[in-house]
Length: 332
Image (cartoon, rainbow, N blue to C red):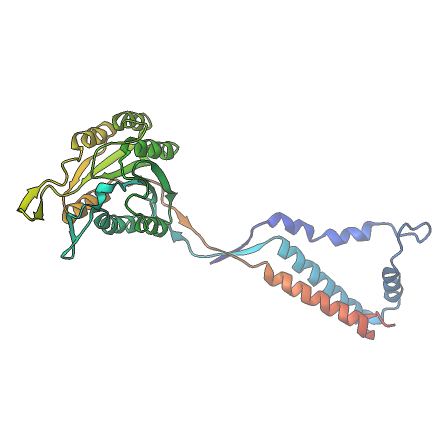
């Protein structure tokens, strides 16, 4: 802990009352403004009774002025330095909410769930580990929407992901528009911090920008894109005519996702089940953090209310004494 004044220049106000001694005596002739109280005060001061009252009065007024000056100078107490996270990554997440994300080919704790439900669980844990990073969220289907800008408030970002619903942005898949929106939001960040993680289970079927064209824009803006293809390769469908094995990820455009990642310096990951999805996010966790100088913040405790309160109390005391006690020289 250490003590200091935030505005030390205000201490130069302390000798200001001494300037009153240099002023010539005020003339009562032609006065523009008459203050009866001040005239009365002057008359009473001429009748002060002894040195003790004068000294006490001087000490009181001096104390009030000193406390007021100290308040204006803003005394503060600095706490012990608190280390701040310095990883410094800005991570934008783009999540597919198209109709195919409702396919139930994932399993969590022995329960079959759809792809979005599994994604919320695994990606939610990934977001929670992003302490010190800024995380943003884009949701896309037929259209792409910025659900959360880059923020240190990862709890809110995770909550927004939890509230996302299939079809919220349309049933189709606008991968190119999602990439374009992410580039727009990341291009103003330091070059080494621009990271996008795109998760989809299909191919581009909507939007105004082709995915590979958007990847070119990302490359020009130095945005690194990691792409994740989600969905099982094998699923058993039961019907009246018996069981048959199908590939629920037949529509997944892996070649395009690989090209997007390769062109921007990122990686392509395949998540066929929740175990693989966990491994994907664990791998992404190992992204090299941005090297920054160590930073520490020192909490500031404002102390000016204390001298200000004492000054007000003393002023009230002086006023009360002046109005009610003969010993201050303000008798009726």
